[in-house]
Image 1 (cartoon, protein in one colour):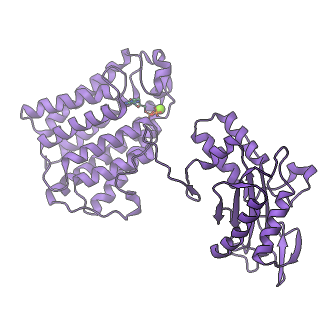
Image 2 (cartoon, helix red, strand yellow; image 1 turned 90 degrees about the vertical axis):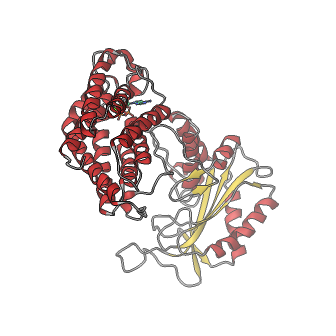
Image 3 (tube, protein in one colour; image 1 turned 180 degrees about the vertical axis):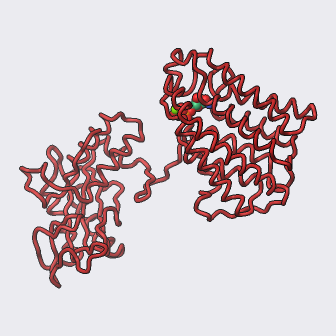
Length: 456
Ligand code: ADP
Ligand code: MG
């Protein structure tokens, strides 16, 4: 862990005690540089370095027209007399350090710019410098008013030979209902300019257009929404598809119980060559999928929708590689079983075969790499073959589950070549692959549900 303290507020301590200054809206400049660096793949040292660099090149100065009122309090933390303006505000409700008469918008712009240009970081010439101005509203100053002040700030900077780069005007760092604003200048070098210009997508701050990363371990944002929020529309379904959905929900319920019982052992075998989280991840995923499937069934969803909600919940909550793969598996199963027809053994077999293919495309594992694919492939092959033979679904499934279990145990002789365990591949020899073992356990558990389900 590293700690970088933001010290942008020029009013809070003199220049010879710059390290004692407090952080105000310059936080954004420093956090943005650090975040963009991390996103660009800098290591921890590099992220810390640019955070310190951005802090050294960031200066701010704020004013307030009224203090903020904390939730539950009946008076503001401080008051500014009518017609007066507090100078040198803090963002945690600290009063201003000085007080002056309220200026016009243009006079305020001049005050901001002239003070900050007296405080240019060492080694930077104003004329020709490239600067990001951040004009920040504290909570109850209107955007229109900020834009009026900013208009003059921009001109004043350009008059001094400064090139303005991608400015921000808005509520970036607020203090409840405080009326006030601050100007921050981030003095760029080439590296900081690139980091500032990089797109960002966070709950409180967005810049440019940031594409989501699609990689293993990430969740698929393109699927249905969060099942837990109850806002999804439930697509129409037929009653035979809703019957299948009820069986799916019962199966996920049983899977969650079985995984709870096996979690410690799954964690133990993942610890040998992996990171020991497979039991926890499977537990979180299976529980979330169970809850999502229940919600779907109660909302009248068919089999496909139930599986999609379960898939999203599993990959969202499980974390880890196996969570993403289980999400892909369940989502693909759903596509074949549909919402508008009965689920026959042939449809189940075809759905499992497509889910197997999808997982192999998604994770790029082949049989023999020592992953859950080693269990999924024999499971799917056996299920398709036995359904072809005309077996009833539960009987075909039992044979397939046995094939999965045998294959999972047989992975013990292999060395892992993919996934997290690959860096300790040889150490995994003698222990079966955790993802294959849990897959086989899920198959066996679902068999029990199918076997007792009179509908099948
Ligand atoms: P993580 O590896 O992220 O900690 P888990 O511990 O939950 O995730 O899951 C590990 C399991 O994921 C492995 O035992 C293996 O079965 C499976 N796995 C890893 N990589 C792949 C892959 N590329 N394709 C299929 N399964 C994989
Ligand atoms: Mg793991």
